[in-house]
Length: 355
Ligand SMILES: Cc1cc2nc3c(=O)[nH]c(=O)nc-3n(C[C@H](O)[C@H](O)[C@H](O)COP(=O)(O)OP(=O)(O)OC[C@H]3O[C@@H](n4cnc5c(N)ncnc54)[C@H](O)[C@@H]3O)c2cc1C
Image (cartoon, rainbow, N blue to C red; front, side, top):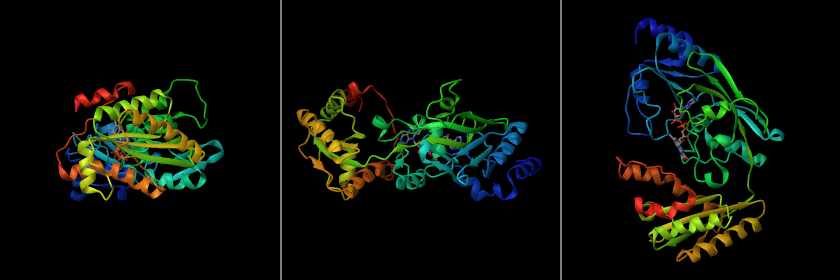
């Protein structure tokens, strides 16, 4: 980057918030994917006005800007393909207001997912999307990728919880979308346009999220199947019966083998494992839903090794192991590729044939 350009960037970002040092450029050349591309500079966002100045500078000089949260998404979206500036949003990490009576929280994009949950839980609320990278990823990254996670079938994805955004557009202008009300339907739905736009339409600097009451009770179970398609049929039957588990995940034989070898869990040697969790305001409600689901999974050949979590800790360790699968597989086979497919629930059993 030319000296004059660099001097202007430092002025826009603040000297302490911009770097051309090799160590920073190398750091921002990677994310959790196997892509690589070196930026010309890195900058750390501190507030909306500063982000606006940086984007005005970039717009004037035609420099690409790549916003970055924690760099956990797996498709190289924070890796610069054509140089430019990586704009790290992680220092904008304040929760600005938690308004429980309004069922919302207003925060900066760099707040780490689990930090938000830690603040919400004592008030009896949570932000339901549940990305596997939750311990490090940022809410800004969740918004920009419209992240979902294992509770998606019951609780939806990030866009279902974003009420409004503050966004700095490519020319540096600042825009506000949505509102702070549960119902707000007039005008164009610009919030949804930005959610999932992966940093291509602007830099998100403020987020208003709807929060949901934390279910008081959960019941967790896992059951083994001799055939993967039977596990798929069980999922389909459960949904048809009107049961809505908060988590329903099939692990195929490869994942089962990995968990058996790499975790302390007592995982049976099965062709498929179905993990189920139901939740409710009362234990009876959650248990009743689980019992109904178990009848159906039995009819589909499941339950040879039925296991109900005996404690919250046991259930948590099951999900922890499930979330760790990606990391374990990466260590075993660094070149593995993830296929994220989506099908109508009734066609889940057919997925076996595309393995
Ligand atoms: C399409 C898609 C769907 C996904 N769905 C799931 C899922 O269902 N479950 C799951 O476990 N994981 C999912 N992931 C991965 C998960 O979304 C990421 O691990 C996590 O949400 C990213 O957070 P991060 O802070 O690491 O963001 P990063 O990886 O740093 O950035 C991710 C994207 O968001 C942009 N971005 C980050 N911050 C901002 C900001 N403030 N303003 C504008 N753009 C920004 C980046 O430019 C980049 O394009 C998904 C990823 C993608 C690409």
